Amino acid sequence: MILAKKFVTILCDDIRREVGGKASLIGVYNDVILVSAIPHIFSKLCLFVMLTDVNYKIMPAKLSVRVVTHENEPIELEMDFATPKQEGEAKNANIGIELSPFHVKCAGETKFEIRINDQEKPVIIHKVLFKTK
Image (cartoon, rainbow, N blue to C red; front, top):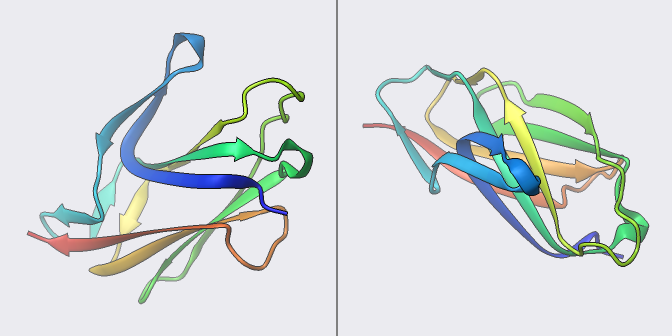
């Protein structure tokens, strides 16, 4: 069984929660992030995940995020997932993941791997390339 029919991930500087459950994404990045020098420290880097047609019967109890580069030690973090909605409510879900501070120690590709519960294989992999200007 799959958790959702579609996953969309967006990397940004900040996620602000608004009235009515909306989210505002601040400073959205594409797949290449240019920084003035490496190493570089972001005060905050956020990953916003949108799930479409969620299967609430297998909604995870916890989410784990692993940040992997070719030279750095992987960063691991776990978070409890919000209580699943009841049947008949919204079929889509949004997840905001905040990494603060976020250190870029080397140029090259970085992967954000998201796993649900204790699965070995990630359900989402978001890739970005860090380069100097």
